[in-house]
Amino acid sequence: MSSLIRMIGLVFVIISMSLFSFFIEFNNYQNINYQNINYTSFRSFDNKKIVDSLMKVERIFELVKTNEFQKIENELNKINSIRNIEIYYNSNLEVEIDIIDREPLAVLIESDSYIDSSGVIISSNNMLSDSLPQIIGIIPKVEIPKILKIIKGFDEDKFFHNKLESISFKEGEIYVNIKNYDLDIRIGNEHKLKNKLKTLKGFYAYQNNKSISEDYKQIDLVYNNRLIAIKK
Image (tube, rainbow, N blue to C red; front, side, top):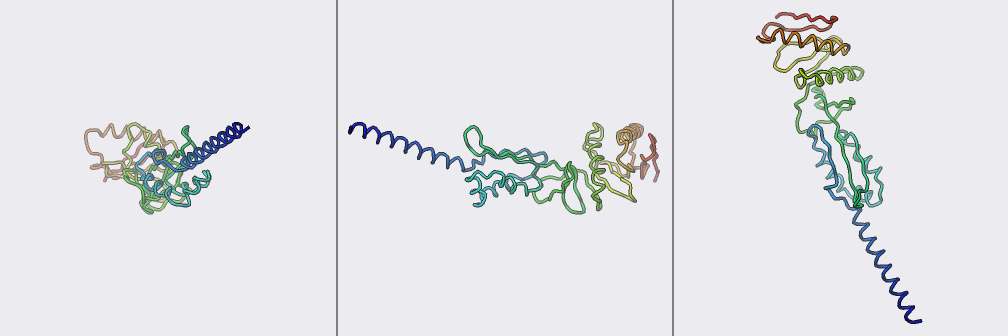
């Protein structure tokens, strides 16, 4: 009988130690290993420093311990240069965070900020570089999709990729400037952009042997498949 009691007591001690060990390990899993915060950045946003600092705040730390991941995601989503956040337990039962930054397409000169492919305005506070096309002047919200379409059109064109310097509105029409050429290009609107770029490339090829900007002050692409070059 006494041996049975001792055996039961031993089993109880083993179970208690196992539960205690599991409790200690589980609590350790609540701590964030900062190597498990994965960043995908397209253009040098410094979100790592901001997120690391935020995750050390006691309130956030408590949310991690209670597995309230949605609330943590809501806090991190307040950083408007972050596009997507996912928080989960990895195969080692450690908290892991995947963060994807927004991709800025252009600089908004008037507001000292950036705009991404979805039209979201991003503060310039944590941007490390700004070698992007400039949007000059105040652009009405209704015109933003048109601007984005033109920026993407230039960027996706092999010839004009990274050559767009600025974009602006004048009397309701869209104008652009190309790097290294001191002249205005009147696009008009975003319609038939591929045809307009094709026509513009033909003009550049024709003027290959001399500086275009020395002879012309403006190029008009608002007419169907036609280019009008206005001399200085």
